[in-house]
Length: 124
Image (cartoon, rainbow, N blue to C red; front, side):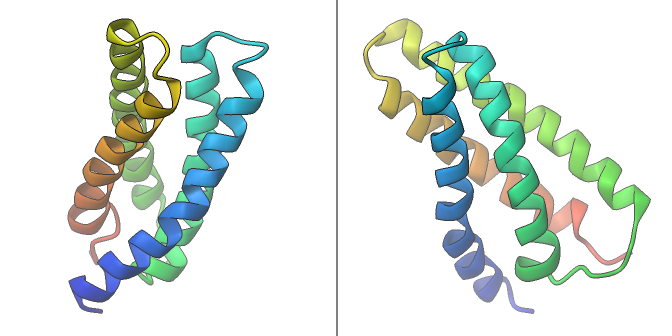
């Protein structure tokens, strides 16, 4: 599949993953810290993203334990980027919860697409 189609599908799936992330985050921030809420929402969104990436965006239908390991590594790194970006922006602008969430998600989306395309779901 061409990279152009993958990018389009990535941006179509993105809102579904984003709604998962945002919805869980906004549900939890009333009960937990911003960082813990963000971490939990990110993990929920990562599960949805895995399914989209594997089966729809990159059509990587073959079973692979190494793929799961690579996906996990990239998502742990992305989790760190996401939570740190979110918290850093909230430290600078405490009331900018939505802006911090959007910017953290955009940065993480760029990071994950690059590594998913050329490392995680690359045909072996």
